[in-house]
Length: 138
Image (tube, rainbow, N blue to C red; front, side, top):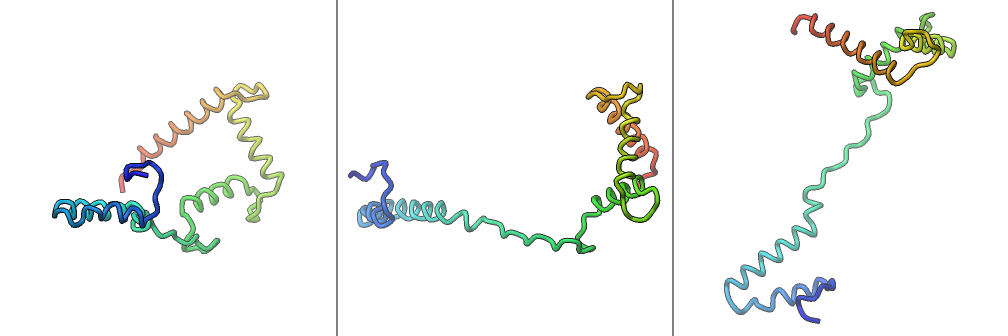
């Protein structure tokens, strides 16, 4: 097998091939060192640049909760929990979803289409942008 063969050689063979020109000249030594360093960096480079994995946050710890999620949950309970018992019953859930359906089905056909959903979302986004513009800058 010649030294330019495409088969994978074991590391000892690679070292023998690369160091064959070691005694020939300074340029051959420099090239050999550069190639060896390159091989080592390619093989072990992944370990050098790997990021340590963060442990998952403990569930339910108040200081580690995402404030945006907490705000969404509070908004959901404000809208759905009509008897204010800090629980959403099935009847409260169904009543809320029926109101949502009726809001989207503006012409009361008894069904909603993608166009109905799109129109509702656009109207809500437009209203939210107007609200944000009306707020004074902080």
